[in-house]
Length: 540
Image (cartoon, rainbow, N blue to C red; front, side, top):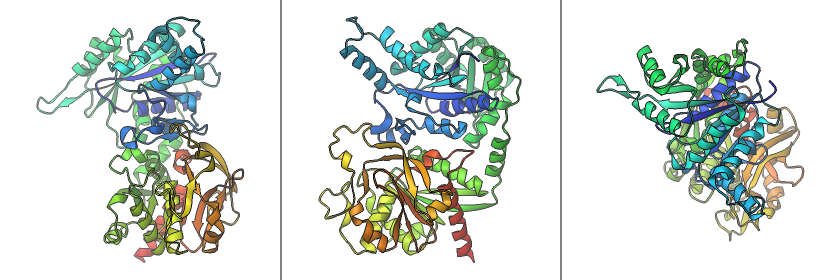
């Protein structure tokens, strides 16, 4: 294919229907046929990126190798396609307007009145074409966030309309994801919400090429025909998307519904290759037929919203499959933990993960959890703030430096074993200013972590402002907590582990961001293995 084809995925009726999963599933099906695919997310909110958003607002903030703070859907794209994304894969209204206003201030519009059309829409299209014109991809799938009809989505919808005009009907299609609700009282599936949603698209000048219909019930022929007739799409382009047992079922379900075939036909591409999904099916088979089960506690401060720890949850699924076991991941609010209930809450788990986060809320509970697993020899995994809590707990209770702490929680602490990174001390803007993206790390030969990775040089993704204070490194290592991972350029401690514990590892970086279906992260795999071993030891 000489030029990339553009596929747009819009949504209607309600949000949270799964545009990201449908986009990732279509990408997987096209990739399985030998095509090179990338997926991008356009979010209508005015934040430059999700970096300053509370996880309760928008779920976790996903970080790419090049240091972009992005929407969590990019995690799905990477986990499904097993290929990295970048800054170019996530664009927001805020970024679009920021770019346009910057150009206007530089005088690049030569005195013209700057307007939504054409200047904002042209900037959106520039970002749409950025990946397509790179020559790397056969397909660029673009997910438009929000719902059709939202005021903030209008410039993006207009840009999609213009793109179809710019590249031609055979080079661009629109897939509209919608909801077909089932009314129990009437015992009927209702198509009217979808009709209205498509009508809004038509009013914006876009005729959807394919309808993907989320539903709790199978769509009978008469419903499909009605949707085809009133939404002006072909009968075989009405795709049923039933609720799935797991998101990893969706590519297989879309394969049965021939979604990729419809896309290829619409774009006039002849490809009769059967998708190579053997590895994916093997993964699903192991996921649905575990031979064992392990119970792991996730100690965090945003546990009311599962999406706040989305990548960690998916990494555990991948690691569980690799160990042929089901991971029963139980969220525990660190604010609820105290000395009276610590044993009754944490004693039930085969392993404990202390999650990332920011701010002082819930910190005493996290430190208490670390102490409990260290003293009771329960497998422990700490990520980012979780690792920092492990260092604080060890310094307080083993080195007996009772006022050990982090300047994140107490600027006046006399023993800052965790301190603000030097380059962060002059930072005033919060957005995009943390230590972000992939950095190298050298692992100590003979350490548990180097054995897990099977090598001594790695690269992992970061998102933090505070670091291990190397002034305390010698004391801490003498007491038995070793720094087994060091950044070769800055000397920053990246990994700590205990030498006298069955499995105790803390990482400053976020390994969950690199775990995919086909390449589960080794740290998660070995942590689940250690939890399984702990379970069997306790039984015996």
